Image (cartoon, rainbow, N blue to C red):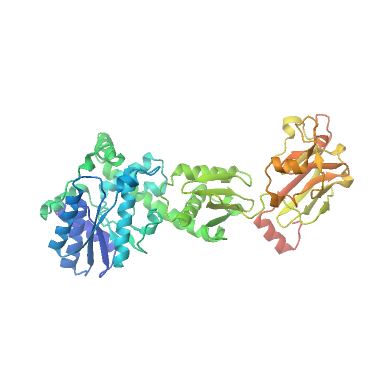
Length: 508
């Protein structure tokens, strides 16, 4: 079998086994005029003439406004389409102007412009399929690019044979309905495609920009890959095989992630994803990462420019951060850690769940030891501990736990209550200076809506502790402390709440 026949065989296998399109479909073929797209268009025509597929083929070409000879390329495609009896669409985009936008490279601007144009053509003609001519060498370059950028499995698996156009992150201007982008040449090597063109007398256009090594992909093609071949002459085949392996692993993990998604994820309002925190915390890190990527994907219809480091940093915040901790994600998204949920939403969004404790009653007496529900989501627990070490060893484990000298507190009058006018305390570290609780809320930027029902630990002498903020110095643990009063506020988990509902015991 000749090299050209091998390319045709791979094309047929990709179309049939991958179900890239069906007989009778309207297919928009992206044609630059180079050997890859020219060979693909020729093969699509052969499906009609030799395999009776009955495809409606539309040759679509975009002038990117970059090269002086681009107009000649467009005329070449128009003439070719007439010769082959095909419909033709020619478009123009000022890609250099697009590339002047902040953070936009010329390569990325060209990609966006190209797929927007193809989507517009597909939309006008009701085409369910957009065919592009990426091949195996392009796949190798993509895998290397993702590796150098620090991508995870989703990037290292390379390009997919078929992907919905809406997942390609083209901005608000993109159209195309439910069209899919398919890549029927993804298993064909460049050399096989060039031989195919020679065998069938196809004369492609030459794009000089493909030699310009100021472009990242061209540097990979002309410099890095040839250098890697000095270590392993089969490096292209190795990288393509690696992409196939990683694609299988990704598909398995993604399928499992979607199964988990159905059990712990919800969307309480448009543009917001909530992941149940207690269930999420018990998952393998790979599944946690998959859930976060899925949340981003559903909110932004794509994961372009979402690299491993973005996901890793957000996961670290989710695992270690207290309620209220936040992590910035690309594409204007933010991860926020709540008590019950991990939220993914737009940067300006804030969760409605209580990031601060709230009291339903005006005042609750505290038994020691004891436990009491102060609201639907919060409980308070108390105990006395003998001999807790002072100094560094006496630091509470979190901001919602206070250690107090039990002998300096009127335990009989100990309560949790809402703020009263002129409530004040002498916060530790302020040299005995008193501060009104109202002013403390302002300084600590506690939102207004949380202040009226914010719980304060107090006894008959006044405020002892503003949970999460400051402890009064009169209750401070010192080296001479013999007994330590522990007061702990805790946000109950969803599983605890379910247990309480099932048992009917609020102390469960």
